Image 1 (cartoon, rainbow, N blue to C red):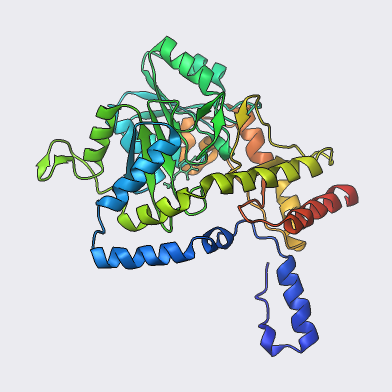
Image 2 (tube, rainbow, N blue to C red):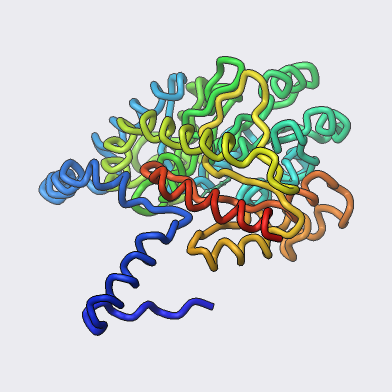
Length: 392
Ligand SMILES: *Cc1c(COP(=O)(O)O)cnc(C)c1O
């Protein structure tokens, strides 16, 4: 339990200084302020222009961001939507997912991947993940294919691409459609291909903590298929391709202009931020090797992860998390349970059915990592980890 820190001005000067240095030594799990400080003036000016224009829904800001993000991902179309969940379920719907269709999904992911499949009316079928990259185990996916399987939905977990070379090869051999859950992988590459450009559609979330984050909820679908893009544009807006002509039954699921404006500014710094994340990850990889039972995140050959999360494994992640918290270092659990061990999804698998996903969920602890994290903060995190493993 954490007590609210006393306010500095009520304390004698020496105590206030001690409190301040404790506060300075704290390592937050995530701090968005260093990123936003770089763009504050542009974004504030952008808000002003938006108010003057009243173009809050659709309009030039949304189109401009869609063009820039399509180019960044190396595809010809981007359709902005209101969240990562909507990106996934609209992408599945745009590609004709219907009831009875089975969609192969990794057992270790954020639950939105599975929610999207169900909300698109299809049936999620879980597949274990691989020790090699913590993403969809392609051999296990091949074994899970039935006559009803229509989609492969790999997730680029923690910022590393799934093995898309083998995923797309399996899909073309078995006549399946590939939809990427790229919500944690903006800019990640593997075997020379970028997230969002490998499947028939790539689905992104711009939730504030993602590598490219909005100032609220937002998402996008990337695709090189113009017809899919056209259907997505209709689905996000009540099925309209032309105003007041409702061809399909759709949703209110647009990317709003405020978020598009923010995202367009932030996209200019995404590569810079991903490099900062990679530098922080290298620091951890260099300084944490060989500590107790600590397992470092795998990086597959030919893979360039963007380190959405830096996830280590250990026998007692909750105990380690408490030790770190006492040293002022915040950590997270992504994910404490694989999909099928959550009450809402217990019909999707039995305990023991997906052993790698279950082992990772039991052992995973996420360390502080964000653009602008300072070397002194990384060093404090490493020192606290060393104290736990060397002292205990
Ligand atoms: C964040 C995330 C989503 C959902 O995105 P929202 O914008 O929160 O709806 C889906 N899949 C994965 C893997 C995610 O990390």
